[in-house]
Image 1: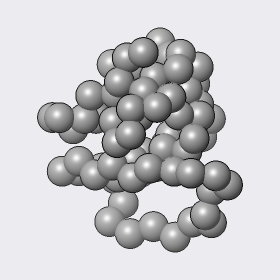
Image 2: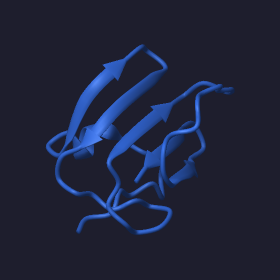
Image 3: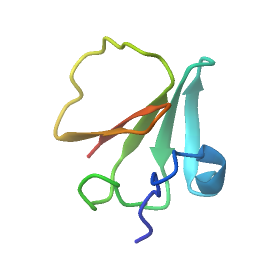
Image 4: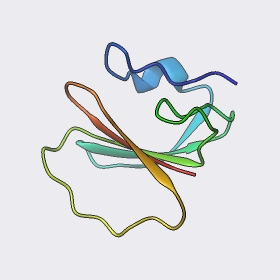
Length: 80
């Protein structure tokens, strides 16, 4: 299982073959994991990924466990 590499930031284009775009509103993207990529925080496969360049966020707690990963320019929220 390939893990998302966030060591130098996260580039969604490197993983487009396995991620399905669900929603994009300029600063925030919501994607589904179609290839079973592994979470960079815990190493398990994740279901959905939110990538945001916003400084602040308010969102409802996702059902079930989730992981947060911070790069220099993005916040990644991965739901399991």
